[in-house]
Amino acid sequence: MTQRICFQLQVKPDHIEAYTEAHAALWPDMLEALKATGWNNYSIFMRDDGLVIGYFETEDLQANLDGMAATEVNARWQAAMADHFVGIDRPADEAFNYLTEVFNLDDQLAKL
Image (tube, rainbow, N blue to C red; front, side, top):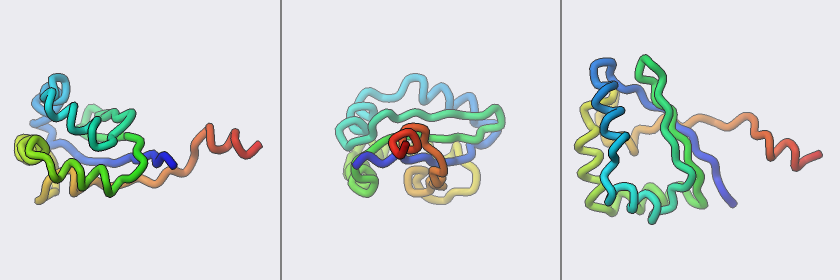
């Protein structure tokens, strides 16, 4: 069964431009690793103040996280992103603040 995952992070105000630029030209090997480890329909949104909301769909969240943790490119990416975030002292993908889904239109319609 597909899980919909949503998470939050906070980018430092003086890092918003660099964070945005990095994601506009994500490394090809990082893109391939995300897809290969099951991060589907993955999007990241950012508010003007640096609030980041990420969303993706997966069959197995822990397998996705473990799969990425086993890649060399993820270690490089996490190191490159490490200084961009407020209040975390570990790789960002280990510090996601997960949000609970409280409504989904398709789920509600399926119950009718």
